[in-house]
Length: 498
Image (cartoon, rainbow, N blue to C red; front, side, top):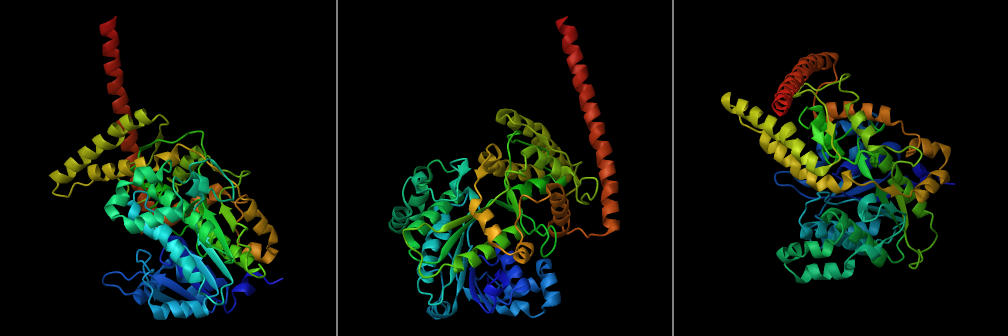
């Protein structure tokens, strides 16, 4: 039986979302572990930077360092295709469209906007309409062997036990009607209809990803297609380097804020669970699921629903919310940050009204005094504005912090069982065997290195530890003073009553 590496040998791949977090990891893994012939990558030109330059800067990206040491010319196999998922035709020229239609054998559609507060008309264009346009393009591809649509485990977050199947019944209106509506109405009118269309979905992101799955269900026809649903994607576990990360989405922002001593209070369901997975595991599932999908002989029966592969923590190895909080602080003493503004700690409050009250004392008032000090020293105030942004973003995440989900992973487990021992080792995604404590150690050090840009030297760590020691003394000293003041006030009140 042909293994995963053999399947990708001399293949031509078309990938959207190439410059995204998961997209880059998929490209790196393909180039490092397979002899893929070419990777066409849909890339949106940016002002002042053409599409070729957006790939060339990867030469300096630490993610690609291991690859380029062994294969210095590897990135030459990545060929940019100018395009934009916001455009009616994906912004792809006729010449490039013909090129893709004649050469491409494997498609990975991962482009998406992941902003929770994206205006509906924008999220709809990128996450839903582009999915339909990609399927239309795939149907023109003469050599297509496998197509992967990257969704999210939270595309059906209106229910709390999610199986590996489609749930069109939760949509207020099917994708065909919503897309037709978007063609007729102005962007402003579509945004006005957001509450009506989104219904019980918590934001435009999860709603438009659910609509995209409905598009797959309706439009895929006999394409050799599968869907991948990862849960919240965090830093790499092992490959190509431990702890690599390049964004501050979701829990990453929380860990980052806590590490700097900025975020001090939050609100969780203390008895809940959080669903997170390493990005390199996601890349491995993506590549393995395409390999499995390609085995399908002949056109897929349109009456059969495409396979869905979900990656989430194993029921035998879950991550409790409070364990996540403890692990986020676990390396505070081992490798702290040099840019801390206060001693890192996090107070978790389940009751929402009490949390909102606590933010005044933990965030707003300290932020005001810090800004006052900055003004007096001639520097620009920033803490009050930052806390305002943190509280707005918390409101967007509130639904996910106060609920827990169970995601069925039977198809993904079956996929793992079908792989050879060699493939299971090279394309590992075993969430049951993941050691959460060790993973968080790597992730936190990676955040220090890749996001905070602090050198991985002993001198840097020692300097940060000295700062931590000072901040710890100040923190507990302040706590003692405040407790003393509170005690005096309480004693005075008691004496008045007596």
